[in-house]
Amino acid sequence: MIGPRRAPGLWHQLDVTVRDLPLGLLLLAGSFLPALHGKGTQVGDLPTRPFDALTIAVLALECLPLAGRRRWPALSLALVSLGFAIDQLRGYHSVAGTALPLALISTGTHLARHRRASALVFSVAYVPLAVALYRLGSGGETVSGFVTFYLALVLAWGIGAWVRSTRAAEAERRQRVAEDTRTAERTRIARELHDVVTHHVTAMVVQAEAARYLTAAPDRLDQTLTAVTDTGRRAISDLRHLLDLLDPGHGADTGGGGGGGGGGGRTPPAGRLLTLVEQTRRAGQPVEFTEEGTPTPSAGSADLVAYRVVQEALTNALKYAHGSRTSVRVRHGGKEITVEVGTDGCGPATASPGGSGRGLAGLRERVAVLGGEFSAGPADDGRFVVRARIPAGSPA
Image (tube, rainbow, N blue to C red):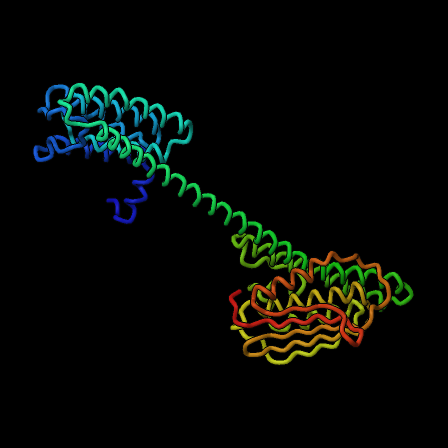
């Protein structure tokens, strides 16, 4: 037995002509009701006549083509119009005449090609019908009556055209929203990849560069190469975590070597800032770290944005001021998180790859989305300072 919830779904799975057929059958059946005889659409002044042997064929021609009103709109309108013309010329004046405005509305809505030509053809075809009805009638129907009826038909077509344009505008709006969503998602993915890859790769480049000068100190060389290995493992773990976010069905836990990068949630867990600072220190950057307060679950995505601010600022310090003193201050408040990362001087030249400016621009966008404030530039004391005020409580 089919449940009431499944019935609508099964109905929409049927062919469109099958779904449109009941309307034509309903009009056809209603035309044979004695109470409705002679009360249908009427144009001209021909007297109403009783149904005869031809009636069933005429009414079927007038009603049943409505089954194709969406799949073959022009053909449906042509058949309905022919049935309507015979209906009026024979004087049946049945309720089936209602099929004509319905067919016009459907044609105006669903006809995709040759719309103007079709409208012109059907308009021209109305003229001989009006002339024939006028000559067969007793003259009670005036020219203005025929014109009014034609305008009513034009209105039905216009309603269909309006529905078509409205649907097209809605489809265009949805397509535009979908494209904007895809663009925003691609931008977010690029930003995440930039944050994850740039920091780890920069640290590895700096550490590998330092290792070239430590061949005479095996202990220190071993420590540096171990740091490079750990950084690479964290990069792989963070990339796996990012790929899990892009493809949640791939697996809830990818494992992965190295600590700190996997995690189950998008926001970095408590202690990740200290891990980030330690990694930067092992790359040869002296970093002073101060953290006030405790991250709370209610902070939402503010914790992640604060982490990304510190990560990008330390990456830039490694690139452009390697070896210079850097200070990191993070304060977790009840309503906001404030971050300040300052680096002294410009440091010695390194072989680090140059930057594109995407990182700071991305941070400014991240903070702005949450309604915060972001700034990055030289301070009065000569340091380069990155500051961010991030409202807490926004959903991740």
